[in-house]
Image (cartoon, rainbow, N blue to C red; front, side):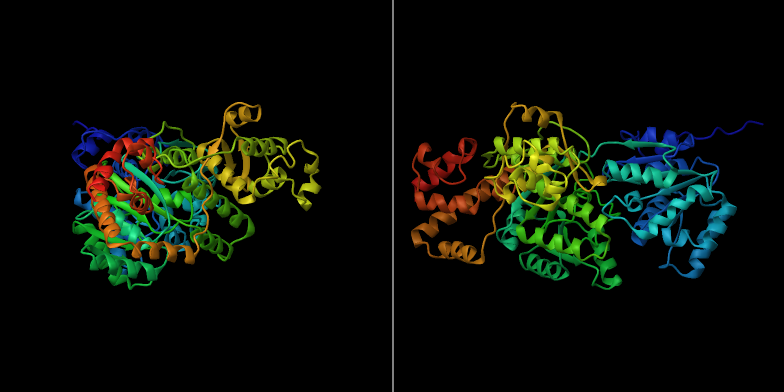
Length: 602
């Protein structure tokens, strides 16, 4: 009598899931899980995390228990498995008692080898007793960043999962997340399996995503400009408030798009209906708060636009990661203004958490602001936050259209020296105070008024130096240790700059645009003569034509303010076109002659 050979992971991948080969990183994680090694895998959205535990679940001798935070996420995963012919089960409150009992029986009688359950349900005394009888081969914690107190998305119901490795000493553990910095990764591994296993970080880069940040001017108009080339495409527009979600969805429908709102204030029936339409129908724009997105597996989302500042780099990365999961080019854009910063800081202050957590969240917000303010490659800034390095991408707004920069080498050296001389143990507020020579109790407490760097940047404003630090962090010149309340640390390049090597240029901090100034700008457009209005319309038409050919938003060519300045100055040659605000050498070489031709004929 011959014994049937156990299928290999590749056998299951090909015969059950229909893929020819594993994606990078998947096979190593799967082999580790099958060997009984606890594994924390950090993989970008769309890299195939689910297969890393779904494939082993069909090989391991006893059930795999997947801890998942959302009903919709569980249902989507189970539906996908069943579509591939795999018996899968889930337990949650949206199912009837009879349905939950039937699904549990499928697990206990061996018909189903993978069970999805929420952390709240799993950690009840009754369920834990039932799990003891099952003696699972593997516990999987999905969205594992929710476990860590260092993470921005810590969930108290996840904290109880830390008991599992003591309750089930014969079971293996695997955890998966798309977003976790160094401190969060170490804490997850400690909490879930006492660092007995290994941490596998398989890259955060999504090179198919273009990255853009725009200073807020007029959000509705800017959103319409971004959508010029997106007719017929599926995408997500994130808003901060429920009211704006409804408002933008209506305005987009009025403009000829098919847009649906999604927020926590809607009934669950309405949310599920809109989600089903978004998943099934082409060309739908979901206008949503952050209540939407976790577990959404729609591969052809062509754009993700944020009309407001997200809460952190982790949240931003996770939200833009929902675009372009098919590997094809996708567009992301973030509108960024001072009002957003004020609101986000207010949210942190009022969230009811302890002071330590609030301090960490303020530092995370600072990192995101630095990303928005940076004059360097945005992909470099994004990946640097997660501990990776890369060459300039050529696919972000700063690479395509380098922004205005100011020389700030002396101020940077003063800041870097202050960090070095205070022992790389302090955060932004104290370092700025030392560099500016301020008289504070903390400076006196540590005798930092006696340091050589004290007061070296006294002529620089506080906002300027804070922006300098954020941009230096975004570029990787400085590190920010979240686990030590944002203590700033020096890179070798920053240390060399203290000694006089290199220069530092930065984007000036954004300034508040007062309502009166915005009104005056709008009035300036309406006060144009008929002849000037006609030229402005022609220039905008040319800009749209070029943008469509490039497959980029209109602002990539020239901003409205630049077109207005062209109308006012009416340049006739290269040298006076270069005097127009927003027209540099590179942009003139790419677009200048076409605009000069239109102006010459007006």
